Image (tube, rainbow, N blue to C red; front, side, top):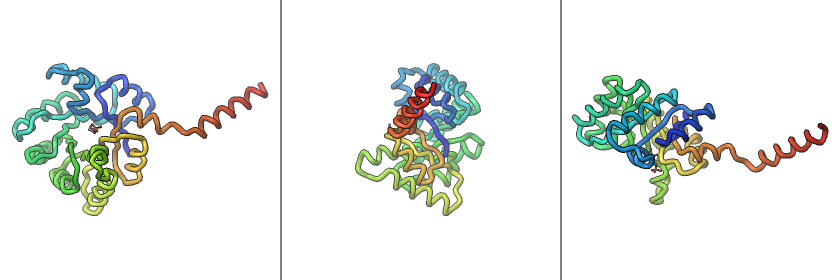
Length: 217
Ligand code: G3P
């Protein structure tokens, strides 16, 4: 399973990358705004900065919602760096654009996915990645992890190559549950990744090992 970090914060991307476990980055317009990255040129430069940190796929989201404009914007994003994956929303023109972009060897990430039907359409269109938002489903009392299980089952049954990229991860147990469900990728903020390190018995055990070493030295 691949680990992506879901942020536009360069410091956090560097921290995750230095752990040696990072396979890529996902961003969205909200995450860019959170870092104060505004204006076309600044946003484009920021994508290149991210690509220069991480040796892996970097999702950059289109703002356009009409087919022709999504294509134009997607091609411009893809030309920034070889690691760019064009993130396209799950709408009718988005599906058509994913079909065009994937047929022209541009990687795509179909975003804002909340149902198995949407997942089927994205896979048929040839999306490289599919981003079901599991935390936002949990927020409205649906079961986000169950959707991952359902999509993984459908893709495996029919041999679709689209990778299931579990997004909108809220905590480290989401990461474990998505791993169990067979997600190809999880994308999450730095904190849930770092929390995977924690276990009280590890801390207690390490303290004892170090104390016992000191007794004899
Ligand atoms: O990148 C998309 C997704 O991960 C958003 O997460 O926390 O805004 O629901 P969230």
